[in-house]
Length: 344
Image 1 (tube, rainbow, N blue to C red):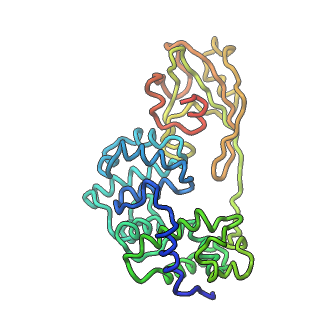
Image 2 (cartoon, one colour; image 1 turned 120 degrees about the vertical axis):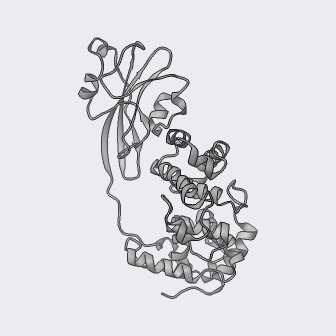
Image 3 (cartoon, rainbow, N blue to C red; image 1 turned 90 degrees about the vertical axis):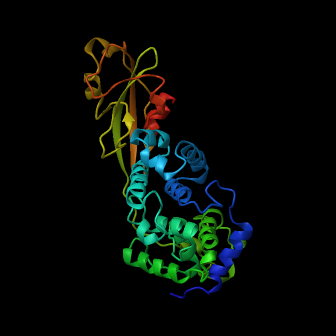
């Protein structure tokens, strides 16, 4: 490992203060609730998507106590459409533990923050460095890319041993002054998000250009190295969209584990035949097959086969669930493809 000059941290701090992002709603604050909320929402989700959700969450749950006191259905309902719903369930449990274990105050160290649900090493470090100035390294996907390129770190990050080595490198590069930690942490994030891009990085705009090993080699896109590829799978699901003429929809709450855990959903079936058996026999000829569409998850493609039918409000399906009035169902936590289908 060739390492990088000690000036790396100083360059990042200077660049962030002059050119980094400062307009996002979770910036310019040392409120750990806001920083934590944004960090969880930003996992695998674009900034442009998160902004609206972040603002709506703060309006509904202005502090950790309000979030802890909320019902899970309310939390999932507000999260609906943001995806990766385990984040929302962990968010809710984390808020409750902050209240129960820490009296409503977030712990001030990354080590303690990691004991809370849904907070991993990098998220804990982000909260601790932004809010409390702790000298602790973050290593999310963007930062891995920046540091791997700057250092010429060629270890395969599919290996936990190599990832540990990069953590050690990241820790060694931290600025000496705790007061610089928020700008340094934000600067690494900003470089990864706006300059040191996965494809066609804007090296001419980077403050690390003249000390970057990947630039010297002329192969920035060679880094970071990660060989393990997730195997994608596919699954076909049939969704029964049963509604009444006044807009009520038949929904049931999914189990607490598995796909769309804890969300309200149209009845799900493995085949058209099993779906048809859930519809009262006299009504089956009224069912309409809608166009099939694909919903992409991280590791799986879901081929959705919607079947629509209008039923009298006093009719019941042979499936779990109940009628939910038109005024209520848009407020529930619904999987993104179900919300898209229903137009809510």
